Length: 238
Length: 215
Image (cartoon, rainbow over all chains, first blue to last red):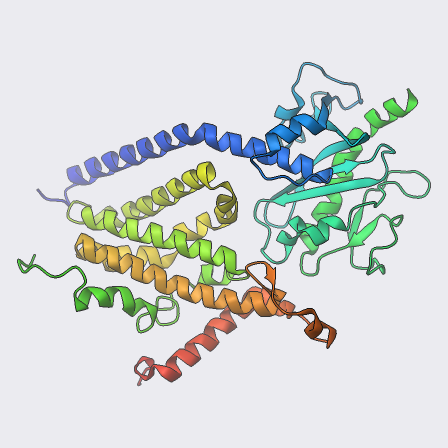
C-alpha cells in the first residue's frame, strides 16, 4: 500500500474526520444533561449569592425554591408577560432584540421577611462577556449585594471582579443620586474614599490594571438596571 | 523494529521522561511554548490545571499519533496531528464540564492555548511519528512535565510577589505589610513572566554548564 497516493490520502482524511465527528458528537450528546444541570445550578447559586446567601452548587436548587418567591418576565414598558418562563430567558440573546420583543427576567427573593429584587446583568469586559446579578432592597435604591462572573478576564486583574473584597464594596451603595435620579454605581480611581464609608456617592474603588473590565461593570449596571425602571415606576405608583 | 525486548524502564526510556525536566526542557532549552507560559502563570492554580491537562493531552496524543504513524499520509500529517490535539482537548473539556464543573471554568480560557501549544505539535512531529507507542507515551509525559514544571515555578514566584498569595491563600503576614512592604503589581503583567523565565534560564545554565553554547 502506498500511503502517499491520492486515494489513500482521501480515504484516510474522510475516515479520520468521520470518526472524530462521531466520537465528539456522541460524547457531547451523552453528557449534555449533566452539563446543563451544572449550568442551571450555578445560575441559582449566583442569584442566591447576590442576596447574601452563599451555598454550594449542590444545595442551590433546594434553597433557590425556598428563597426565590417570584420570577417575572418583564416587557420593556414594565408590564409582566406571563407566557414566558423568566428563568429560561437568555439575556445574551435578549439584549440584541428590539425593545418590542425584549423580555427581562426579574427575580424576587424573600429572605427573613425582607424583599429583594434581583436583576441579572450582562455586559462586555476586556476579552469577552461579563455577567452577574445585582440585588436591590425594597426601596429600589440600596444595593443588598452583587455577584459577578466572567468568561476570560485576565487572572489577577479583571478576574478579581469575582472576589469577595470587590463584591463587598457594593453592599449598601445607592443606585440613585441624592435627587433620586437613577445613575448606577461607578468604578472609579478617583473615589477618594479608601474605606468605602461614603455609601451615597454612587462610587466604588476600581481595580488597578483592570480599567476596561471595570468600565464594563459600571456600564452593565447602568444599561441593564434601566430596563427595569418602567416596572419599578409602575409598582411605586400603585 | 528491533527484536530485542527492552525493559519498560530501561535507561534510554527513563531518559525520555527525565531529560525534558532539565537538560532538554521544552521552555528553557528548546524555547517552545513560551506564549502560554506568559499567559497563565499569574496564579498557581490555573498553572497546575494547565499542567495536568497538557500531560493528558500530550501523552494521549503522542500515543494516538504513534499508533497511526505508518498510515498517516505524509502530505496531510500536520492537519491530522492538529485534529488529534483538537479532539482530545474538546473531549477533556466536555468531561470536565459534566463532572468537574469548577475545574472546567478554570480551564475554559486555556483550551485554545493547549491546541496551539507548539510543544505538543513539536513532539508529535519530531518524536511520535518515528517511535513506538510506549516510547511516545513516555516522551509525551516527560515533555509535558518539563513544561509544567516551569509553569509552576514561574506561577509560584509571580503569585507570591505579585499578589502575596499562594493558591489564592494569603501567605505574607500582615506585619510585613505594616512595615511598608507592598505587592509588586508588575509581577502580574506578562513581561515579568518572560523575565522570570530568563532568570530561570540563567540559574539553570550556571548549574548545568553543558547547556552553555560554545560558538
